Image (tube, rainbow, N blue to C red):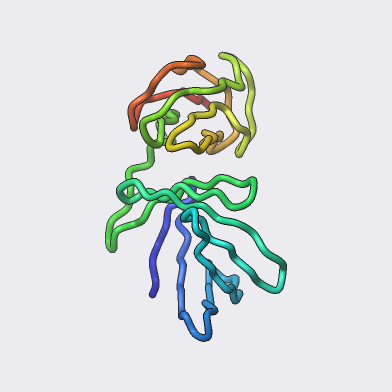
Length: 161
Protein backbone atom coordinates (compact mmCIF):
# COMPACT_ATOMS: atom_id res chain seq x y z
CA UNK A 1 0.00 0.00 0.00
CA UNK A 2 1.38 3.44 -0.97
CA UNK A 3 0.22 6.70 0.65
CA UNK A 4 1.40 10.30 0.91
CA UNK A 5 1.51 12.20 4.20
CA UNK A 6 2.19 15.87 4.91
CA UNK A 7 4.81 16.22 7.66
CA UNK A 8 5.14 19.94 8.37
CA UNK A 9 6.15 21.49 5.07
CA UNK A 10 7.22 18.18 3.46
CA UNK A 11 5.27 15.45 1.74
CA UNK A 12 6.47 11.96 2.57
CA UNK A 13 5.75 8.91 0.44
CA UNK A 14 5.07 5.84 2.59
CA UNK A 15 4.90 2.28 1.25
CA UNK A 16 3.84 -0.58 3.49
CA UNK A 17 4.06 -4.29 2.62
CA UNK A 18 2.85 -7.02 4.90
CA UNK A 19 2.22 -8.43 7.30
CA UNK A 20 4.40 -11.38 6.47
CA UNK A 21 5.26 -13.57 9.46
CA UNK A 22 4.14 -10.68 11.70
CA UNK A 23 6.58 -8.26 10.10
CA UNK A 24 6.05 -5.28 7.81
CA UNK A 25 8.45 -3.85 5.24
CA UNK A 26 8.23 -0.03 5.38
CA UNK A 27 9.66 2.46 2.91
CA UNK A 28 9.54 6.17 3.78
CA UNK A 29 10.91 8.35 1.01
CA UNK A 30 14.24 6.64 0.20
CA UNK A 31 14.70 4.78 3.49
CA UNK A 32 13.58 1.19 3.96
CA UNK A 33 13.30 -0.97 7.08
CA UNK A 34 11.48 -3.96 8.53
CA UNK A 35 9.38 -3.74 11.69
CA UNK A 36 7.34 -6.11 13.82
CA UNK A 37 4.15 -4.56 15.22
CA UNK A 38 2.30 -5.76 18.32
CA UNK A 39 -0.94 -4.11 19.44
CA UNK A 40 -0.93 -3.53 23.21
CA UNK A 41 -4.02 -3.81 25.44
CA UNK A 42 -4.32 -0.03 25.83
CA UNK A 43 -4.51 0.62 22.07
CA UNK A 44 -0.85 1.57 21.68
CA UNK A 45 1.60 -0.38 19.52
CA UNK A 46 4.98 -1.84 20.28
CA UNK A 47 7.33 -1.54 17.29
CA UNK A 48 10.42 -3.75 17.12
CA UNK A 49 13.18 -3.56 14.53
CA UNK A 50 16.90 -4.21 14.34
CA UNK A 51 17.37 -0.79 15.99
CA UNK A 52 15.38 -1.74 19.09
CA UNK A 53 11.84 -1.30 20.39
CA UNK A 54 9.56 1.71 20.82
CA UNK A 55 5.95 2.29 21.83
CA UNK A 56 3.73 4.25 19.43
CA UNK A 57 0.37 5.88 20.06
CA UNK A 58 -1.69 7.02 17.08
CA UNK A 59 -4.79 9.22 17.31
CA UNK A 60 -6.81 9.70 14.11
CA UNK A 61 -8.81 12.89 13.56
CA UNK A 62 -10.16 13.12 10.03
CA UNK A 63 -7.19 13.03 7.64
CA UNK A 64 -4.74 13.86 10.43
CA UNK A 65 -2.77 11.41 12.53
CA UNK A 66 -1.27 12.50 15.83
CA UNK A 67 1.62 10.15 16.48
CA UNK A 68 3.62 9.81 19.66
CA UNK A 69 6.67 7.61 19.17
CA UNK A 70 8.50 7.33 22.46
CA UNK A 71 8.98 10.98 23.47
CA UNK A 72 8.58 12.38 19.93
CA UNK A 73 5.31 13.86 18.65
CA UNK A 74 4.31 14.13 14.99
CA UNK A 75 1.27 15.56 13.24
CA UNK A 76 0.78 13.96 9.83
CA UNK A 77 -1.96 14.76 7.35
CA UNK A 78 -2.98 12.37 4.61
CA UNK A 79 -2.58 13.76 1.13
CA UNK A 80 -5.48 12.78 -1.07
CA UNK A 81 -4.49 11.59 -4.52
CA UNK A 82 -4.01 14.51 -6.87
CA UNK A 83 -4.60 17.17 -4.21
CA UNK A 84 -2.47 19.09 -1.79
CA UNK A 85 -3.43 20.66 1.50
CA UNK A 86 -3.27 24.43 1.46
CA UNK A 87 -0.04 25.78 2.88
CA UNK A 88 -1.19 27.21 6.22
CA UNK A 89 2.31 28.10 7.36
CA UNK A 90 3.08 29.97 4.13
CA UNK A 91 1.11 32.98 5.37
CA UNK A 92 2.82 32.84 8.73
CA UNK A 93 -0.12 31.47 10.77
CA UNK A 94 0.22 28.41 12.96
CA UNK A 95 -3.05 26.76 13.94
CA UNK A 96 -4.42 24.41 16.57
CA UNK A 97 -4.43 20.90 15.09
CA UNK A 98 -7.55 19.79 17.00
CA UNK A 99 -9.77 20.97 19.87
CA UNK A 100 -7.84 21.26 23.11
CA UNK A 101 -6.32 23.47 25.78
CA UNK A 102 -3.19 25.56 25.42
CA UNK A 103 -0.87 24.34 28.18
CA UNK A 104 2.28 26.36 27.44
CA UNK A 105 3.35 29.33 25.36
CA UNK A 106 7.12 29.08 24.94
CA UNK A 107 7.85 32.26 22.94
CA UNK A 108 7.17 35.99 23.09
CA UNK A 109 6.26 38.58 20.46
CA UNK A 110 9.41 39.81 18.69
CA UNK A 111 11.42 36.71 19.55
CA UNK A 112 13.52 35.17 16.77
CA UNK A 113 12.87 31.44 16.31
CA UNK A 114 14.42 28.66 14.26
CA UNK A 115 12.75 25.97 12.22
CA UNK A 116 11.51 23.14 14.44
CA UNK A 117 11.58 25.19 17.65
CA UNK A 118 8.57 24.50 19.94
CA UNK A 119 6.30 27.55 20.15
CA UNK A 120 3.05 26.46 21.83
CA UNK A 121 1.83 23.25 23.48
CA UNK A 122 -1.79 22.14 23.13
CA UNK A 123 -3.23 19.26 25.16
CA UNK A 124 -5.83 17.25 23.29
CA UNK A 125 -7.07 13.70 23.74
CA UNK A 126 -4.70 13.16 26.69
CA UNK A 127 -1.67 13.99 24.52
CA UNK A 128 0.44 17.13 24.37
CA UNK A 129 0.97 18.40 20.83
CA UNK A 130 3.82 20.81 20.21
CA UNK A 131 3.28 23.48 17.59
CA UNK A 132 6.71 24.06 16.05
CA UNK A 133 8.12 26.77 13.83
CA UNK A 134 7.87 25.61 10.20
CA UNK A 135 10.80 27.88 9.27
CA UNK A 136 13.16 30.46 10.74
CA UNK A 137 11.50 33.77 11.51
CA UNK A 138 10.28 36.20 14.13
CA UNK A 139 7.11 35.99 16.23
CA UNK A 140 4.79 38.67 14.84
CA UNK A 141 1.88 37.99 17.20
CA UNK A 142 0.64 35.49 19.78
CA UNK A 143 -3.02 34.62 19.79
CA UNK A 144 -2.76 31.83 22.35
CA UNK A 145 -2.85 32.07 26.12
CA UNK A 146 -2.01 29.28 28.55
CA UNK A 147 -5.21 27.72 29.86
CA UNK A 148 -7.30 28.84 26.87
CA UNK A 149 -9.51 26.33 25.04
CA UNK A 150 -9.03 26.36 21.27
CA UNK A 151 -10.93 24.91 18.32
CA UNK A 152 -9.21 23.19 15.39
CA UNK A 153 -7.86 25.70 12.91
CA UNK A 154 -7.63 28.49 15.51
CA UNK A 155 -4.59 30.67 14.79
CA UNK A 156 -2.17 30.45 17.73
CA UNK A 157 0.99 32.17 16.48
CA UNK A 158 1.80 34.44 13.56
CA UNK A 159 5.31 34.17 12.20
CA UNK A 160 7.10 36.61 9.89
CA UNK A 161 10.39 36.32 8.01
